[in-house]
Image 1: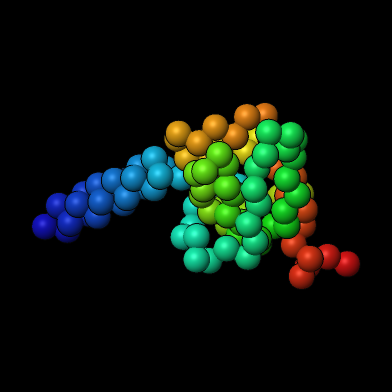
Image 2: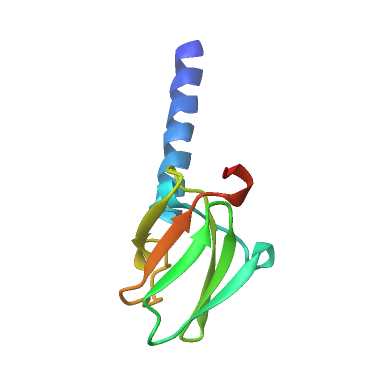
Length: 108
């Protein structure tokens, strides 16, 4: 009986992990969050090359009439990566780099 229970728990855990990975393919950069939680809004224009954020920020990105909100929680104190890594399918972010600075609460 305990073996069957253990197998059920392991299977449920793996299924939950797989579902989370498909929703958030890059958890090392943070998580997608509801727009209501955003600290700031950034409009991506044709001439935008980069965006500066702080670790811990929650930002709504407006791209060509579509938007998504991301809470930055990177593994390193400073990080840079392509915005396309966190943008949902169907939102073309082009070649924009996100520069994540360390959280100002922990600097110094």
